[in-house]
Image 1 (cartoon, rainbow over the protein chains, first blue to last red):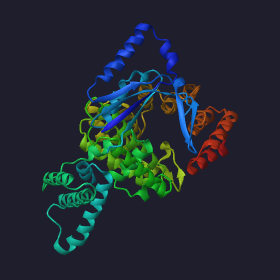
Image 2: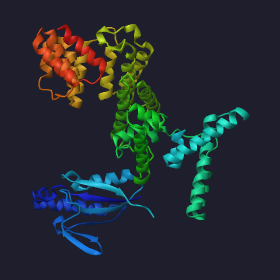
Image 3: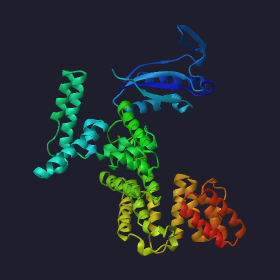
Image 4: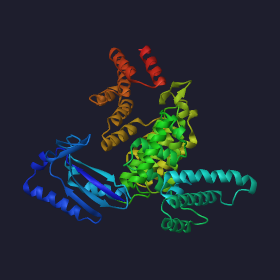
Length: 114
Length: 374
């Protein structure tokens, strides 16, 4: 099975900035360690949601708007791709992601297998 | 049987379909040719063969030879005489925390209780299509999200067992409604199975004991449709055999050094099943349970026991500041303490508040009788 672990940061920016530099480094190291975990096949951290551009096409015209889709407080901050035997393995990895204990949440979604 | 099939096939729908076909073949063949020596194994083997046929047909349509080989390899693994009991794997799958609680309950009743979708729908007072949809969605999630079919590894087991027990207890409590005894009996059957399958888990025996002891008083709880309090119940209506079975399960739980919330509640239920309730002991067990759970409902029950042991004054003090404003039992209990203290005006107000909140008809009539007698 392949899963995408989507990392939602909640009010992440403020709680992130309240950390000391040392604590921030420790959290970044955790993200790095998860990336090195066997079964993790990819992943990325996204720039924050204020940098997002949303694109739609109506009647053949490309419409762009500033900001993320949808407009929610909880923004997608990054993701991992994981190959695992089952959902339990994916849940265990998700629970190790720092955002999960820092007011955010991880959404675990299976990929469609082709 | 379904457990063995789901374990083998990894697919609820296919397993159910195959099981139905096997029963149909048996119904046609057994009266004519006589039943086989081991009917259970025959049914599982027949259902498995049918399911493999289905898989093969499906795959022939889809991809062709490569997958056909897989199906054949699978068939070779079918043992001919005995099948491993996989009910435990099945219940842990049904009660997986990635499923909604509603779905866990419905799946457990469907897959382990063998209830029809229509029966589950009736028991939970939802339209049958709603329940069918709930089951379809849950089975789809199990398949697509990769919820494993297995007994959880040791580091996950305590949490997962708690989830399983919560589902069984929820089914039992739904059954306490009186009109839905089917669910109570189902929950006890599930509890008995769990105790067989996990003979070393004290909380499993604690829950079983709790359900058996509570259910043993069922016949005495209503008289002509009216609620009868424990103290006024006709004890000859209590099911003595079931009380014995409940006490045996409790002893097993205690022998396993059980001291979890179900074991404590079973111990309380066991004291209630004696000829005269030992209120000081019951009150101290509730105090322990409250320390463990922090539940205001437990605090309320504990206050009732204290009122019996030490008088209504102590009970009243114990329910001050409980955050259960919308819970009719809080007001009914408070009203009862005030009534016994002769504070009739305050008792009337509390009964009125309880009557605004109560939903069960026998309880409403009981409260009305108490109010009228003031």
